[in-house]
Length: 433
Ligand SMILES: Nc1ncnc2c1ncn2[C@@H]1O[C@H](COP(=O)(O)OP(=O)(O)O)[C@@H](O)[C@H]1O
Ligand SMILES: [Mg+2]
Image (cartoon, rainbow, N blue to C red; front, side):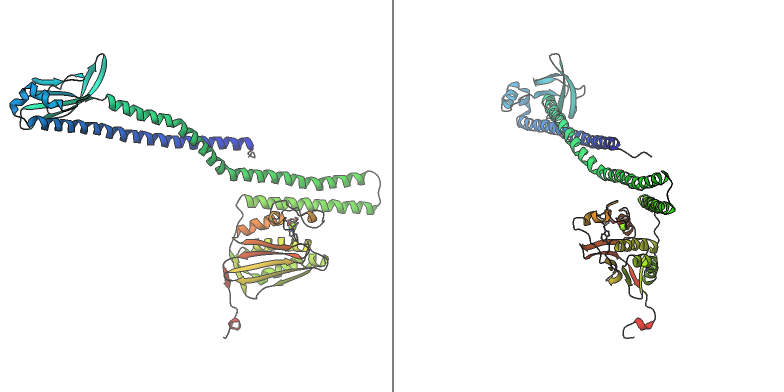
């Protein structure tokens, strides 16, 4: 698989932005359409109810008079004078469809059969087609129909206005959506960007670390091959070569280990770990190294302390810390490893009397390939992967790692593990028993 580069990330960001934008726009459009439909629906209803109210008001005014009065055009005109008809058309007709009175704002044809109710009719004004809405009602206790009609001009104009103002804000919504989407996309991609950066850095650092021992090996072999040398010379060169080879093999081992951790498939098993046993193992493992460096190594734990965790992983973490404790120590210094129970937690501390870590270095010591300035010139120690592995392993078993250190006094690395079980070994452990 190709390591994704900046171009891929940029492409992914643009793709995400587009997807967010399109999704948001679709939602906004649907909302606008839904809103417009509700709005126009209620506008048409309002239109009808206004029409109906007008018809009722005019009708009430008309039937207050004698029936005969309705036939009297003069009196109708007199009554209607009080009504500002505006753009309404009025028609009064009898049951046979004979028109008694009309005052038209638009030309339109009445339906064939006159019945009470709302009608949408075809109309005309000059050459212009018009849609006319009419309400027909029977005048109370008379044999006459009243028609009140209006064209949709104003309504349609105001609906168009609403639609236009929606369309007007769409570009702004689009712009805002793009900006917000880009921000979302950027923050969504940031962790990927970060891990790609780390991966690149890792490859770069690893190749750099491999280059040094290879150059050392090559240089030593070349010098040794130049002319005949005495056996001691060869021995010395071979030792240097072996050192470099060891360094390379340690680096490759660590990198393979890290890559297994990175794939997230590293197996974790939970078992009951008897700390005393674990400490004995570590003691026999590091006694020789400690002695050769003149460092006093001691272990201390309560006899019956057990933890539920992965034994191999815990052992690996402690090995890394003990190795550092010995490597970054002073002549006749000490490394103490002790376990303490604190509530539900057990703290396992690796304390040394070594060179300590500068405060400004502490945030970086768990980074891959990070090495303190003093450690870089030391022949002891590794390539700066130890603590990064220790940190990942503590995460893996749900534990925590913390550090306290003082330059020239020493360092204290503490692993905090939850879930402790005590096994009481015999009744002599029970107080008062
Ligand atoms: N016990 C310690 N005392 C002093 N410095 C330490 C100790 N443990 C770690 N360090 C510092 O942290 C750095 C990173 O440690 P580590 O990841 O184990 O890498 P390495 O030991 O290969 O240099 C070391 O280079 C060293 O500077
Ligand atoms: Mg180390």
